[in-house]
Image (tube, rainbow, N blue to C red):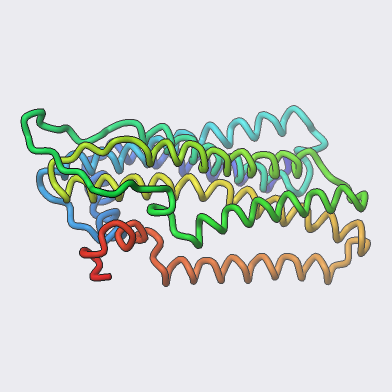
Length: 286
């Protein structure tokens, strides 16, 4: 792999290991649970603190393990193809593999660490069924579909005009489609699971954890799709404009502007509290 790819792999791997270790530290576990509570706009009741702390830690740990497995797998595949591993796009595949692994990791975590329920206690349940749209904001949900669709279209366009298409680009697009399918299929299975609860607070917190897992899952196709669009756009420019520095710069600038716009939109719309506005409007005052 080229130096940039090795650097990306080393940094992401180190961050993943540090995160795994931190999930066993009581102080950091408590801090992450409190930070999560602030982000979703809910207070952790004493009766649920141990459960919420464990579920937040499990989500981070599973995501970090998946991220390390994802980047290790990507690095292994690149090492099997020296030509592709030296390609400028190899860091994109490593980053994409890391996010794909993270999404798979948090998907597995969603099936564990449910709150214990007293069999003799009165059960609380909502009257209406919930759907995937109740947990993930349109900005993220639609954004994932649009970005992956744009990646596929850009890849096809590159192939049609005879642009140089590497195996990395095909892998990025394929992983983006696969990650989106995982979100759409596994996400619906997560949402359809029962939610045993003894109080509205129990149910609201289960919704909060569900929403955080689903938002982690949709991040993978967004990152992979964006990576594929950048690489495919570069291939198109190389073919149509003979690698014009201006055109390449314009593509990079467009991507940066789009990323900044999405970041600003995400910060102002608070998508981490979207589930509250949909399912618990009395909490937000909506």
